[in-house]
Length: 144
Image (cartoon, rainbow, N blue to C red; front, side, top):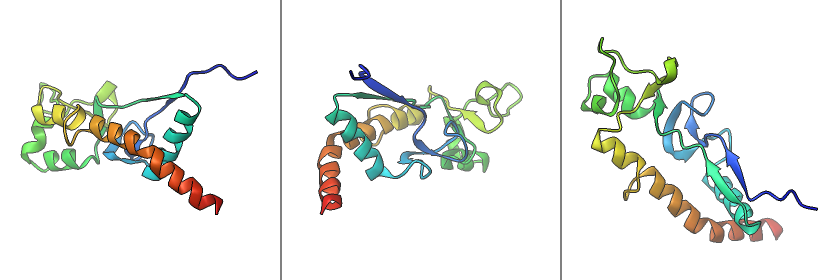
């Protein structure tokens, strides 16, 4: 008798400094978890088993080492990417000092996250479309 599950839920997979919720790069798999190929292998293996994958996208905030935030702190125009408190300080997500809240009213943030040619969601969809061929190529090379 099988487990009778239809999917798996994963915590944050994007590159981060510590715990996964302090994203530093939405376009890179956290090296502690592997790399893009490892993630593609995982996706292919779940698809081969008719399982769906749910990712915790963490698009409400980023870590303080997120390059756009570093530029914003240095006084750059990227400051519009982030929410501010009334006192001018950066809005922390849920009170966590190392997590800075994104400003989803800023078009550049929306483009970064949503389905746009360079958006994170588009990147994940593209990765999903090409993962099967890469997975099988890697598996074949491993079996030799």
